[in-house]
Image 1: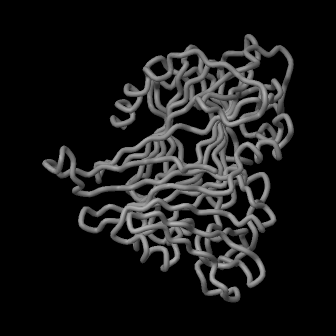
Image 2 (image 1 turned 180 degrees about the vertical axis):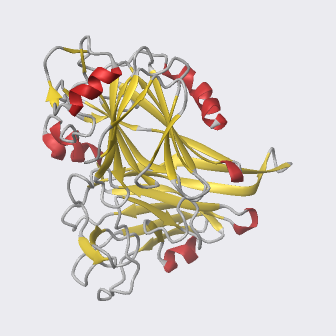
Length: 413
């Protein structure tokens, strides 16, 4: 994990300014808020994800949400002690097991307690060493909250005993009842020499209650924000996503879009259901496929040097043989033939419609994916980015061949 240490050194200087909380619920333009959403992490296809969180709180609560439906799979309370920075990594072993690694930030954390939902909790004390646990899923999303601590209760064993005795939550004797966070996420593929990063989405104005609670008690979440989950959805909702797509075979340039529905674990925002063989899931259309003959789907506009092309849903009846679409809480849309960010055969990897793939192949394009105004929910809470990887791409005016990647968050309208 030497790479994580280097990443931490690069970011330590970025967390030195003071943080403050604003009023109404909104996305924080400076990426500092009362809760963070990490819309995508992956330990698939030789990718690793590193997360650095800066906090002025003495404790954090971290939820790992399923890539499939957004359900909480595991959660942890992190008691920071004197640390102001918490770091962790998600990666896979050679045998394919996905791992979560708690990593020392040079000052050590007092205590980490938590685990898989409905399973016995575990504690990791004084993590001046690296502590690893197995992940339930190798990809998904995260939520991070600053939480209150019980004044004077700073012994890890005492806190574990408190929860094991059946305590669930307390609002008595709390200290440090307000906190602000910011986070940096890096995704790396060491074997291919690729590294890119983005900033976690921050929400402010949530006004969550001051509580200290069991690490795997999951009623402390965004639904308790002022205005409820509807207010959070409004802050996160968009009518379209716009970003670049670069597909150039001569330098092995390939682009994938991450399209994440961060509130999938709270409520559905998708228009139709599809049977994926083992379960029925709510899905969305990406591109030119209709959901039914009477229901509008998304449209796509492609801006290239040659001009602008608009692709509308085909005027045909629904076909069950068409691609399933965006049926997961976290989706990876590929514009090439093989997955880049996801494992081969991963259910959440979706190849864009062939008409769109053919139009984008061999070009650099700007793509806008728009939800139709006639849809029941014309604005939907979505987050994500595009990642373009280059193998033997040119640098320094064409003098150097190198592997590198570019990550750009989607433009949200």
